[in-house]
Image 1 (cartoon, rainbow, N blue to C red):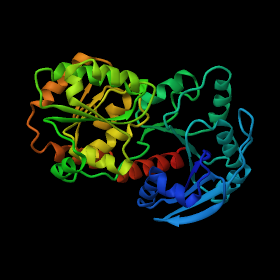
Image 2: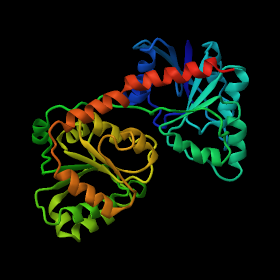
Image 3: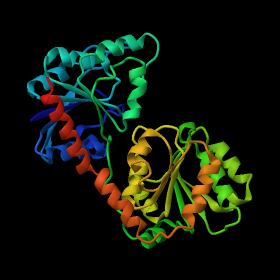
Image 4: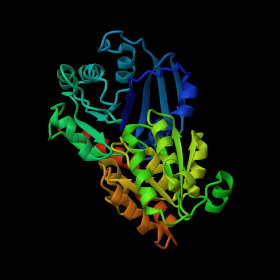
Length: 373
């Protein structure tokens, strides 16, 4: 089976193709995982210069394509020629934000099934919905982290309720558990329990629910610590003020700030509990990475986190924004026997969340679409 994974996204930094292969790890890891199942994979990527690279059984074709200046760009002729010349049995489009390009693909490849994968996209509003309906009407399948994430698209009638929806993660992680004691020495993380929060200081991540629950759960317990690795954002000053206003938070919450991605692995290895109260996530990469390292996840009850934890089969879920529910979980999990918990969490990751799993799930999706009438 020949499959083309195509991305119409242009790197704003105008980086060279070989650099992009190093920084876009999910692109290469997912493609290699699918190739490992026996599928012939070609990745065709819009770029600022053309280059073909062979790596791990995958052909990467970076295609120079000018960007249109209109609200909806002109069809990318160079990319279309690259896709059609690959003679694909299935085309896998990355992202719902390219309706004109997706429609053009369907015209160039009549009868070839097209799968479109969600990457934290949102249904458009107003007149753009008509363009999206027109552009997406020929597709034969969709992929979301969780099926519930497809419902807003169905409500907006961007595609029908009968269109196949495959539950497939956008990416995974190569992080591993390692030795917790070594990670704590390296990072300075401490606490019993030691909690970790990773995200951007922005409204969708809802850091205040985590802070308020921590203050409530550990007011009479001075050994707990919360460590926050974060990208700066609009809520940072308010978060700092909230911490300064409460003696529990002031003494026990550590705002680490921005940490290089390769060092996040050590923070996750050092943590006992990983906590997020996100209001929405496309996949939840940070949570996936935490599970890869063996940290117990306490996560808000949103579709992607239900999918990642298999409805709380590992860790626990709480209603988003519910401070009392999260505080109760923190108390419960802080007193639980953690013997073997890291091994069980890692086993869950390997069974449901690894790149090998994604490769098998994508192959299944491709075969299903190729065999459908």
